[in-house]
Image (cartoon, rainbow, N blue to C red):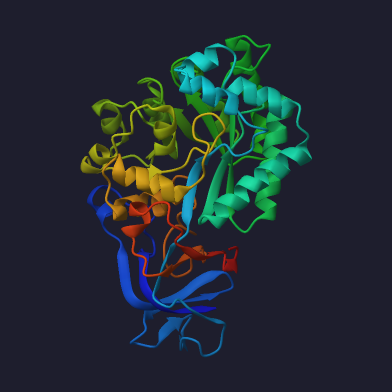
Length: 414
């Protein structure tokens, strides 16, 4: 296909650029009055309508000449969103805990009463694999319709070997079903499972690792106050690496936990949450391959601090943003709302927010070489807006419908 009469083509990134850091986050390529060509699910060329030609594998492409043509009518085309931190394989709902939050209980207090993650584990245990898949697919379809084209999905509501593997099988089934690009993370160390002591559960997670590694891409640990210690995390990640799983860490949501530093020690792809950080975390991340990932939806829902995104960027770091879509602390996978929170509460510019939810979030799930930007050869994961939209309007009028069509791997999904 070829899309013509694009008002603004945004999110253009040169080949070989896998993430943006520091001042680079304020930059993105833009072409006004543009066209974009797609073949076999990949972006093959783009340019200005005035030029009327572009290069596609060495041959000239004239917009609309030999393929399906879509008239954007002045609408904007941008990369589809990438969501590098979700927990969307879960059963039922925890809306009862929503009332607890309204009545003043904290996340930690709900967990201490046996709620939170353990409630989700109890529900998941009673839910069949087919039903778990059905419920998760409703969330995946919702996310794709809202413009998300790459999704990382974690286990972590099983908390025993059988149920953790059940979750990982469901994630694999989702990956095989949808046009979105899906990555899988083993988060057995999300909380201590019922019937275990802390130490016996850490050992159980370690023992699960070889089987989990057959299904997952990454290993994750909730390294935070009241959950898993730095020493626990170090042991788990060491075994994960031996099984071929690269780390992605939950850290510094509830306290300054040391999770960032142990993540960097193990060359984690990302360290996530970071609602509570000091300059020591910024310094630990400088010069590393690890990208800090912040989850403003969780800050919004729990009423906890937002991450220090601006300070990280001013220190020369890049950040990613993700939804943390889960039943207890961020029950939404709307990345457009994540962008709005980033601009309104974290004071990022719309361009910085765009880079954080596209290229950098793709980097945080190891796929920025194949999606996350308008780059020749990458997957055609695209959002086409209604006419008249600009990048700034998307987080500004954050509830007004803006999507005309979503393309994932070149396929129309909305």
